[in-house]
Length: 364
Ligand code: NAD
Ligand code: IPM
Ligand code: MN
Image 1: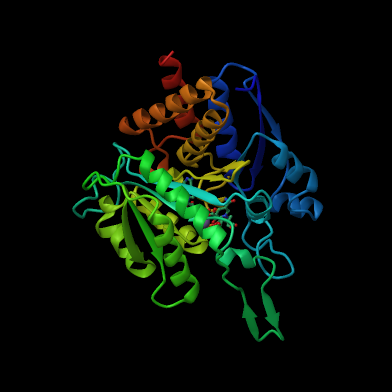
Image 2 (image 1 turned 60 degrees about the vertical axis):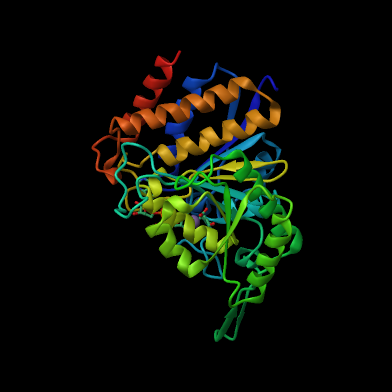
């Protein structure tokens, strides 16, 4: 346990600052003053437009040194570097690679009070985790692909035994700690790949099988990624932990979020052995930025994941209690229909966070 935790905060662009500020207000109300020390640092597309830099070295260094990093979201479509890709996403990607944040944990859970878009059997109970490999796969190529004579472009998908082993171990460990799939209570890890077509994914699956031998108490399951999109829609309650390559995890986690009410509700935790970055799965949502209506639950639940991660790492009961209170307040508020317009409500971002603060205070 530490007296104080240094949290590096980067607001980002679009709705990033709106949801980030809302979350900080809640964190301030849930923990005694001084337990978390927030320091704010610039990065993102707006910052690039002002200064020519999307991620200042000082911001990176502060994040590397901090006990944890909180990020809203960044990126402005069209604000790109010489290779045509967005500069706003530098912050997230450079932290992932530089700090080796190899495990991206994206819970997909249907909360009571939320009407999801699915109406199939099993859609009433959705509670699984997409465990996205976050340090290699197709994203390993960021900044290293080629463009030849404006005619041919390449990006290489990279998967290593070390990278696959550690993410698959994490998947089985998460399964052990879970309650199993809602359909049958079975603790199950689904390996989602494209092993039928590409060597790199066949390798992913073979390493998965090797690691799985160490967890005979957990059921193994396989899905090829194209069919997986159907299964996530038609039998979501079958899933417990889904482990997958970086790019597949990116795409599937947005689909999963849609099945439980939308991106605004989707939290994410990106952790390595020594560092953690906590930000929602969604982006800067330029279409609703500046209106005060961004859904804060994804960000708030990501900040609760940060407290849980720090609590475990430093054996700090205060943080564990605070995380539990935030999650309970979110569940209660959703049951009562406290929603922003994306979920059919008419509350603002600050209204929702105000309701969460009241609930936490009422818990004493
Ligand atoms: P997006 O996630 O920003 O938005 C997709 C849709 O979901 C939009 O209609 C948006 O209004 C809605 N949405 C997202 N979050 C919401 C919330 N909290 N409340 C209510 N509605 C919400 O994805 P996009 O439009 O593809 O990307 C926009 C920008 O964000 C791009 O510049 C992209 O590169 C960037 N991006 C950044 C991050 C990040 O920083 N972590 C993640 C994803 C995308
Ligand atoms: C996410 C985002 C990121 C990704 C961007 C911001 C680099 O979409 O975290 O899902 O593509 O991984
Ligand atoms: Mn994404």
